[in-house]
Amino acid sequence: MTPVALCAPDKLRGALDAHEAAQAMAEGCRQAGWDTIEHPLADGGEGTCDAIVRGRGGRREQISTRDAIGRPRRATLGVLPDGSCVVEAAEAIGLAQIPRGRRDVMRATSAGIAPLVLAALGMNAPRIVIGLGGSASIDGGLGLLIGLGLKAYDAEGNMLRGRGMDVPMVARIDTTGLDPRLAHTELTVALDVDSPLAGPLGAAPVFGPQKGASPSEIEVLDAGLARLAGLYGERARRPGAGAAGGLGAACFLLGARPIPGAELVMRETGFAACLAQADLVLTAEGAVDAQSAAGKTVARVAEAARSAGVPCVIFGGRVDDDVEALYDAGASAVLGIGRGARPIRQALRESGADLRAASRAVCTLRG
Image (tube, rainbow, N blue to C red; front, top):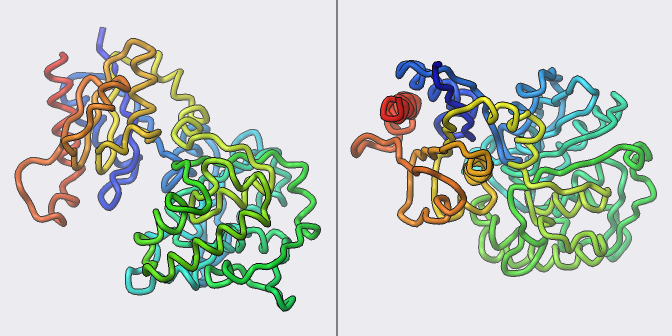
């Protein structure tokens, strides 16, 4: 009987999306004589909507919105067979869409997510899944909330627009204008981090630098987010409130239920049923390091494989030395796919070929 390899990677950022990575892995496995199941995954950030729509056989709707710095954009809304909708923050306000020279957390806003949520409400979606991660904003989710009907005021009573620069000025919020359909819709947020809204491990200090924030901007934003936490109330103190620049806290204010992103995507896409058919699991991400074990896709896949008694190999475009926790999670092997020293652009360009070759090698050894 021909053995079956379950190819279930996350994206390799800058090189391959999860679907492309799964295709490359599967091709390598087939070259070694194996049958394959392609099952791209995500952790709540980029690729979440695509993974769930592919896994559930849904459709994609293009919604007009604006990116984090206000430029017109079309973003994908996933619509599942049961009418539920999938909104991905990175689709609308993704950091990857903003050139490095134009990244500006004080100007950036999460408002671009609101048209997708409103479109889902307009379709009478019984449930909306919001994937957080990969955003360009640190506005505490004010932009999103204002787009859904909340009003925010400064100390003089002036209405605020919901940009990063507005966060330190918020003195009062009024939730009475929030779209009433939200109260009758199940909201779920897929989180890829458990950061608090403010403090040393909060949204601004941890994620501000990668979004282009200066030290002084981080200090101002963190103080503003701490005050915003008081206005949002107890819900804003949950782990994950700092996800996506504070979008987690805004979603909690709306009554959303948090689920770790990788776990949610695996559940939504029927990963367990695919795992039951597999003799080997292959998963991958761009950079495999000590943080990969903290709820990232590859760790969740390894844990599930171990529980099912199926060996699991984790591939990485880059693999750091400290990956012992991934073996503890259930990995049978953690392997880098790079072949020799190369310029970074060449390595990214050749990631598909490298992943294909690595998958073929592993299946040949096990065959």
